[in-house]
Image (tube, rainbow, N blue to C red):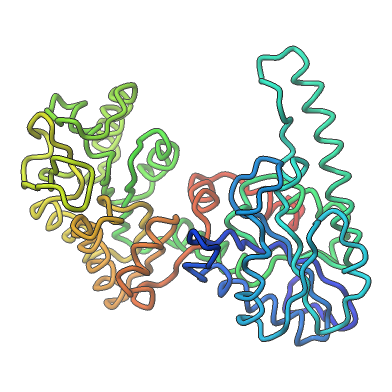
Length: 416
C-alpha cells in the first residue's frame, strides 16, 4: 500500500519512527533532525483523522529499563513539532489502556522498545559459544513474535518510517508487518524518500561519481568500499582510515589510529582500485597533534611520516585540495564519514573542505547524498544542510543498502 493512497480516518495507526535523538546530560534534545524527518508521515495520519501511535528505540539499553534512555524526555519536543499534546505510555508492551483512550486526531508515544530484549530478538545473558545458545535463540525468536503481535494489536494499520533501523529484523521494524495484510502496511514518506535517494545514487548514476568514505576504521567500511569500487569514478578515503593505508604502504604514522590487522585489506583496496580504473584519493598530508584534544600543539606533516608521539587528527592543506578536485566536477556524490576529528573545532578543516566542494558541485547540478550520523552532524554544524541534495537519516541502513543488501524493514512491507 502507498501511504498517499491510504485514508487513516477513524483508524489507529502504529508508526515505527526513529526518535533515537541525541540528549545532553539533562535529558534535553540537542538535535531534532530525526523528529522533523518523521513529521510528514505523522501529520498525514492526524490530518486524515486517524489516531497516531508512535514507537521508537533510544540508545542501547540491551533489554533493561534505563531512565536516562526513556522516551518520556522527548515528549515535549515531539508535541511541539507535531502541534498536538502527545500522550505517553510508560510501558510499550502494556499500553492497552492508553491505546483504548486514544481518539482520532490524538497522538501517543510508547516507551523505548529496547527496554524489552524481545525487540532486538537476541538471547540475553548467554554466550554464542554456550551449547544452549541455539535453543535460547529459538525461544527468543518466539518471544519476539509475541512482542510484535502485541504491538500490532494496538492498531488497524502499520507504517514503517524508520530508515535508520531498516537494516535490522527487529520486532517493530519487520516482524510486526507479518500481522497486517498488504493493504494495511506501508512505508512512510521518509522511508520512501530514503529508498528513492539510494536508488538515485546506485541505479541512476550520472558521472563522474565520487564517493567519500571517512571514519576511523577500515573494518566497518570494507563491504561498502568493495561494492563502490565497481561503481565509482573517484573514491576518497579519509579520516582515521588514512593511517591504516599509510602504514600498509610502509609509512610512519606516529601514534595515529591504525588497524594493524587490516593492512593487507588496505593494500587489496589499492590493488582493486587500480584494476577497476578508479581514482583512489588518499591523504598525502595531515594536521598532526601531540595530544587528542582541541588545544593540542599541531603541525602539518606528510600522512606517511608522522613523528613519534604525534597523531593525525585532520586532513592537511594539500589533501584538502585533492579532495576538492575529485568532488567539484562530480555529478553524483555520496559522503559518509568525516575527514578528521570534527568534534574539535581546530580539526574541522578537512571535513569543511569536503562540505564546501560538495555544495559547489550540487549548485552546479550534481546529486549529493549525505549519510551517517557524523557526516550529517558535520553538515549541520557547518549550517549547510540546504546546500546538498539529500541528507539520509540512516547510517548503518544506508551503508547496507549501498552495499546492495536487502533491508528487512523494506522487504517486510514490499513482501520481497
